[in-house]
Image (cartoon, rainbow, N blue to C red; front, side, top):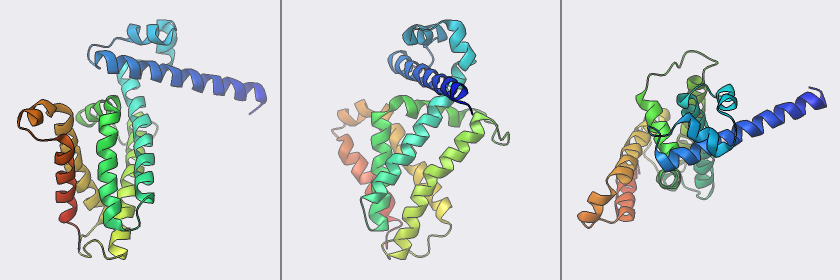
Length: 212
Protein backbone atom coordinates (compact mmCIF):
# COMPACT_ATOMS: atom_id res chain seq x y z
CA UNK A 1 0.00 0.00 0.00
CA UNK A 2 1.50 3.34 -1.04
CA UNK A 3 1.83 6.17 1.55
CA UNK A 4 -1.14 8.15 0.23
CA UNK A 5 -3.41 5.10 0.23
CA UNK A 6 -2.16 4.14 3.69
CA UNK A 7 -2.93 7.62 5.02
CA UNK A 8 -6.42 7.50 3.54
CA UNK A 9 -7.04 4.13 5.16
CA UNK A 10 -5.86 5.44 8.54
CA UNK A 11 -8.07 8.52 8.23
CA UNK A 12 -11.06 6.34 7.35
CA UNK A 13 -10.45 4.12 10.37
CA UNK A 14 -10.11 7.16 12.64
CA UNK A 15 -13.38 8.58 11.33
CA UNK A 16 -15.08 5.23 11.86
CA UNK A 17 -13.85 5.09 15.47
CA UNK A 18 -15.01 8.67 16.03
CA UNK A 19 -18.47 7.74 14.79
CA UNK A 20 -18.54 4.75 17.12
CA UNK A 21 -17.52 7.00 20.02
CA UNK A 22 -20.44 9.28 19.17
CA UNK A 23 -22.85 6.33 18.94
CA UNK A 24 -21.66 5.03 22.31
CA UNK A 25 -22.23 8.45 23.90
CA UNK A 26 -25.72 8.80 22.39
CA UNK A 27 -26.75 5.24 23.36
CA UNK A 28 -25.53 5.91 26.90
CA UNK A 29 -27.57 9.11 27.14
CA UNK A 30 -30.77 8.16 25.34
CA UNK A 31 -30.80 4.35 25.24
CA UNK A 32 -30.64 2.31 22.07
CA UNK A 33 -34.35 2.44 21.23
CA UNK A 34 -34.73 6.21 21.62
CA UNK A 35 -31.45 7.12 19.89
CA UNK A 36 -31.64 8.25 16.27
CA UNK A 37 -29.04 8.29 13.53
CA UNK A 38 -29.51 12.08 13.41
CA UNK A 39 -28.51 12.28 17.08
CA UNK A 40 -25.34 10.34 16.38
CA UNK A 41 -24.42 12.42 13.33
CA UNK A 42 -24.99 15.61 15.32
CA UNK A 43 -22.85 14.37 18.23
CA UNK A 44 -20.08 13.37 15.82
CA UNK A 45 -20.43 16.71 14.00
CA UNK A 46 -20.80 15.07 10.61
CA UNK A 47 -23.56 14.98 8.04
CA UNK A 48 -26.21 12.30 8.18
CA UNK A 49 -25.09 11.15 4.73
CA UNK A 50 -21.53 10.59 5.93
CA UNK A 51 -22.73 8.53 8.89
CA UNK A 52 -24.74 6.32 6.55
CA UNK A 53 -21.67 5.92 4.37
CA UNK A 54 -20.00 4.08 7.26
CA UNK A 55 -23.00 2.43 8.94
CA UNK A 56 -26.26 1.64 7.18
CA UNK A 57 -28.37 1.66 10.38
CA UNK A 58 -28.34 1.49 14.16
CA UNK A 59 -27.96 -2.29 14.11
CA UNK A 60 -24.65 -2.01 12.29
CA UNK A 61 -23.50 0.49 14.91
CA UNK A 62 -24.69 -1.85 17.65
CA UNK A 63 -22.75 -4.81 16.23
CA UNK A 64 -19.63 -2.69 15.78
CA UNK A 65 -19.88 -1.72 19.45
CA UNK A 66 -20.24 -5.42 20.27
CA UNK A 67 -16.93 -6.13 18.56
CA UNK A 68 -15.31 -3.26 20.46
CA UNK A 69 -16.75 -4.57 23.72
CA UNK A 70 -15.65 -8.17 23.10
CA UNK A 71 -12.10 -7.08 22.37
CA UNK A 72 -12.02 -5.06 25.59
CA UNK A 73 -13.54 -7.97 27.52
CA UNK A 74 -10.87 -10.37 26.23
CA UNK A 75 -8.19 -7.94 27.40
CA UNK A 76 -9.84 -7.67 30.83
CA UNK A 77 -9.99 -11.48 31.14
CA UNK A 78 -6.35 -11.86 30.11
CA UNK A 79 -5.28 -9.21 32.63
CA UNK A 80 -7.34 -10.88 35.36
CA UNK A 81 -5.74 -14.26 34.66
CA UNK A 82 -2.22 -12.84 34.63
CA UNK A 83 -2.55 -11.63 38.23
CA UNK A 84 -3.13 -15.11 39.69
CA UNK A 85 -1.09 -18.31 39.68
CA UNK A 86 -3.76 -20.91 40.52
CA UNK A 87 -6.45 -21.77 38.01
CA UNK A 88 -9.30 -21.54 40.52
CA UNK A 89 -8.24 -17.99 41.39
CA UNK A 90 -8.01 -17.13 37.69
CA UNK A 91 -11.59 -18.31 37.20
CA UNK A 92 -12.77 -16.17 40.12
CA UNK A 93 -10.87 -13.18 38.75
CA UNK A 94 -12.45 -13.63 35.33
CA UNK A 95 -15.91 -13.67 36.93
CA UNK A 96 -15.19 -10.43 38.77
CA UNK A 97 -13.68 -8.92 35.61
CA UNK A 98 -16.86 -9.69 33.68
CA UNK A 99 -19.15 -8.19 36.28
CA UNK A 100 -16.86 -5.16 36.57
CA UNK A 101 -16.97 -4.78 32.78
CA UNK A 102 -20.78 -4.88 32.82
CA UNK A 103 -20.99 -2.14 35.43
CA UNK A 104 -18.31 0.04 33.82
CA UNK A 105 -19.49 -0.33 30.23
CA UNK A 106 -23.29 -0.76 30.27
CA UNK A 107 -23.58 0.31 26.61
CA UNK A 108 -21.40 -2.62 25.49
CA UNK A 109 -23.31 -5.00 27.74
CA UNK A 110 -26.65 -3.80 26.35
CA UNK A 111 -25.39 -4.08 22.76
CA UNK A 112 -24.16 -7.63 23.38
CA UNK A 113 -27.36 -8.67 25.16
CA UNK A 114 -29.43 -7.35 22.24
CA UNK A 115 -27.25 -9.17 19.73
CA UNK A 116 -27.69 -12.44 21.63
CA UNK A 117 -31.48 -12.03 21.45
CA UNK A 118 -31.51 -11.28 17.70
CA UNK A 119 -31.22 -13.61 14.72
CA UNK A 120 -27.59 -13.75 13.64
CA UNK A 121 -26.03 -15.14 10.49
CA UNK A 122 -23.05 -17.04 11.87
CA UNK A 123 -22.31 -18.94 8.66
CA UNK A 124 -21.62 -15.93 6.45
CA UNK A 125 -17.86 -15.61 6.94
CA UNK A 126 -17.68 -11.93 6.01
CA UNK A 127 -20.59 -10.89 8.23
CA UNK A 128 -20.18 -8.85 11.38
CA UNK A 129 -22.08 -11.56 13.25
CA UNK A 130 -19.48 -14.14 12.23
CA UNK A 131 -16.70 -11.80 13.37
CA UNK A 132 -18.52 -11.44 16.68
CA UNK A 133 -18.60 -15.21 17.08
CA UNK A 134 -14.85 -15.37 16.42
CA UNK A 135 -14.25 -12.57 18.94
CA UNK A 136 -16.46 -14.37 21.46
CA UNK A 137 -14.37 -17.52 21.06
CA UNK A 138 -11.26 -15.55 22.01
CA UNK A 139 -13.05 -14.33 25.14
CA UNK A 140 -14.08 -17.86 26.12
CA UNK A 141 -10.54 -19.08 25.38
CA UNK A 142 -9.32 -17.09 28.38
CA UNK A 143 -11.70 -18.99 30.68
CA UNK A 144 -10.72 -22.28 29.04
CA UNK A 145 -7.05 -21.47 29.72
CA UNK A 146 -7.88 -20.79 33.39
CA UNK A 147 -9.75 -24.09 33.66
CA UNK A 148 -6.90 -26.04 32.09
CA UNK A 149 -4.43 -24.33 34.43
CA UNK A 150 -6.62 -25.21 37.40
CA UNK A 151 -6.75 -28.87 36.48
CA UNK A 152 -2.99 -28.86 35.97
CA UNK A 153 -2.28 -27.32 39.39
CA UNK A 154 -5.01 -29.42 41.07
CA UNK A 155 -7.03 -26.42 42.27
CA UNK A 156 -9.96 -27.54 40.08
CA UNK A 157 -11.66 -30.91 39.80
CA UNK A 158 -10.12 -33.30 37.25
CA UNK A 159 -13.54 -34.61 36.11
CA UNK A 160 -15.00 -31.36 34.73
CA UNK A 161 -15.15 -32.62 31.15
CA UNK A 162 -14.87 -30.41 28.08
CA UNK A 163 -13.31 -27.09 29.22
CA UNK A 164 -15.19 -25.09 26.58
CA UNK A 165 -18.52 -26.49 27.75
CA UNK A 166 -17.63 -25.60 31.33
CA UNK A 167 -16.51 -22.12 30.23
CA UNK A 168 -19.84 -21.56 28.45
CA UNK A 169 -21.74 -22.77 31.52
CA UNK A 170 -19.82 -20.37 33.76
CA UNK A 171 -20.49 -17.57 31.27
CA UNK A 172 -24.23 -18.34 31.30
CA UNK A 173 -24.28 -18.25 35.09
CA UNK A 174 -22.28 -15.03 35.30
CA UNK A 175 -24.30 -13.39 32.53
CA UNK A 176 -27.47 -14.08 34.50
CA UNK A 177 -25.91 -12.53 37.59
CA UNK A 178 -24.90 -9.52 35.49
CA UNK A 179 -28.47 -9.08 34.26
CA UNK A 180 -29.68 -8.98 37.87
CA UNK A 181 -26.98 -6.52 38.87
CA UNK A 182 -27.90 -4.18 36.01
CA UNK A 183 -31.70 -4.38 36.25
CA UNK A 184 -32.59 -5.24 39.85
CA UNK A 185 -30.36 -2.97 41.93
CA UNK A 186 -33.38 -1.26 43.51
CA UNK A 187 -34.77 -4.61 44.64
CA UNK A 188 -31.44 -5.57 46.19
CA UNK A 189 -31.30 -2.22 47.99
CA UNK A 190 -34.89 -2.65 49.21
CA UNK A 191 -34.04 -6.09 50.59
CA UNK A 192 -30.87 -4.78 52.23
CA UNK A 193 -28.50 -6.83 50.07
CA UNK A 194 -25.29 -5.09 49.02
CA UNK A 195 -24.45 -5.65 45.36
CA UNK A 196 -20.80 -6.39 46.12
CA UNK A 197 -21.80 -9.06 48.62
CA UNK A 198 -24.23 -10.58 46.10
CA UNK A 199 -21.51 -10.63 43.42
CA UNK A 200 -18.97 -12.23 45.75
CA UNK A 201 -21.47 -14.87 46.87
CA UNK A 202 -22.37 -15.68 43.25
CA UNK A 203 -18.73 -16.07 42.19
CA UNK A 204 -17.94 -18.22 45.24
CA UNK A 205 -20.97 -20.41 44.53
CA UNK A 206 -20.00 -20.90 40.89
CA UNK A 207 -16.37 -21.75 41.63
CA UNK A 208 -17.25 -23.99 44.58
CA UNK A 209 -18.91 -26.40 42.15
CA UNK A 210 -15.73 -26.82 40.11
CA UNK A 211 -13.05 -26.44 42.81
CA UNK A 212 -11.17 -29.46 44.04
